[in-house]
Image (cartoon, rainbow, N blue to C red; front, side, top):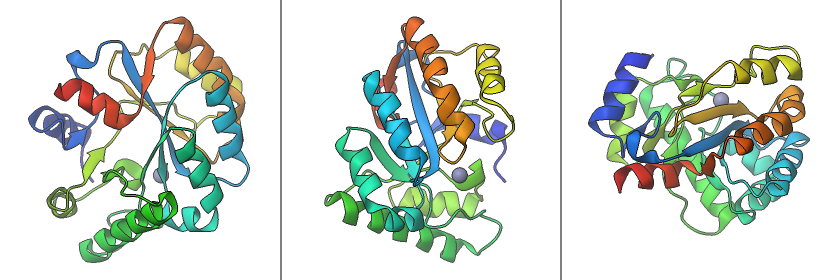
Length: 218
Ligand SMILES: [Zn+2]
């Protein structure tokens, strides 16, 4: 398990390869990210909420779910959001050896590119935010960028959309933050409009993780 400290250190040493949050060059930008989809019921609703507000996000998709719901992946892609890799199955780095783990990520990449019909940037978020240094090294060599998050919406922990809205209001955001949400919770979909409307009122500029990375590299 890679610690928060190591992640932050890596982010400082090589921000173009390991992104935890954008740095001081990120302006007023933040990146919305949604993990674990596509989801047969929630993805379309999330896309609609984003479209109504003309916002762009990044979706870290599981390869196996993408194979089951290619139309949803196409829809995400065609709506101008970034599609990115969250492994083939939702697997912790400690559950399989590094060879199998990397093979799963390459398989997921192939699935996403097959559906999109073009190369997709090699952007990977490890399930649970966990990685081993061996896997990290192997994936960096294969040209993958690691993207973690700096603000957890806590949608995995709360029980009600109001709690999610409240927990968000208590977290002061900084420009360059990467916000973590999950596609598999009904309460996320229900809370999202209120959270986004507040952030829009605060004049944040929403970008994909690759755009955020470009902003801090530039
Ligand atoms: Zn996940």
